[in-house]
Image (cartoon, rainbow over all chains, first blue to last red; front, top):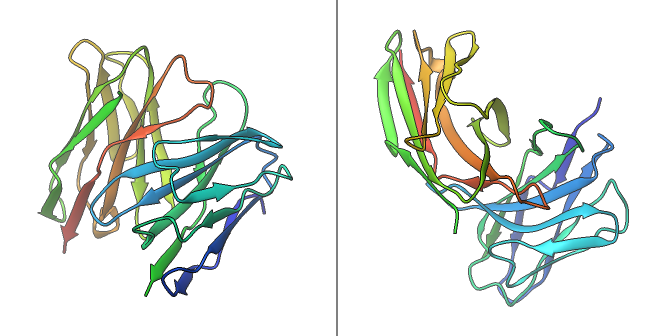
Amino acid sequence: DGGITQSPKYLFRKEGQNVTLSCEQNLNHDAMYWYRQDPGQGLRLIYYSQIVNDFQKGDIAEGYSVSREKKESFPLTVTSAQKNPTAFYLCASKGSGVGNEQFFGPGTRLTVL
Amino acid sequence: EDKVVQSPLSLVVHEGDTVTLNCSYEVTNFRSLLWYKQEKKAPTFLFMLTSSGIEKKSGRLSSILDKKELFSILNITATQTGDSAVYLCAVRPVYNAGNMLTFGGGTRLMVKP
């Protein structure tokens, strides 16, 4: 089945540790996105990538890093520089062409203790 | 800076009621407005609206866009408990190399039996 997967579903880390969230898609989509969602709030864009080996900062990129070495994969690293990392993280991908919409993965809930 | 505001923040209704969710926006060079439903995790796509006055319909859900007044509404008739979710509105401008979306804060709908 085609889709987007994120792992793990739940992640706990100690303060000061870097952590990497996985996002994989087999939809052959060129564009991929990372969003952060805080309780009662909408989605805010962290990073996006339109093509392999290229990515751009979104609205709240500070304290995060990404890579796009393969079309299928867009991992997000939450670094110790991120002041409030506890949140729900959503990955999305989008096919090329007008009207193709972003499809979302199931999300990873990160809790920093 | 693009801005999307959704209202109400939350809503509690009983099964069978009709609800109207609102989304107002400010965006430079508007291209499209999208509605998503988010139950527990991944937002799922509902509608994309690009033209004023043309209603999009899917079962008990419908949506319409007013580009003059810069808002959209999402209607749900004969609500069911399965409609309980957060409904997200997002806009996409025309000149947007990354096909990025700006999301509103969402409306949390709870449908009681």
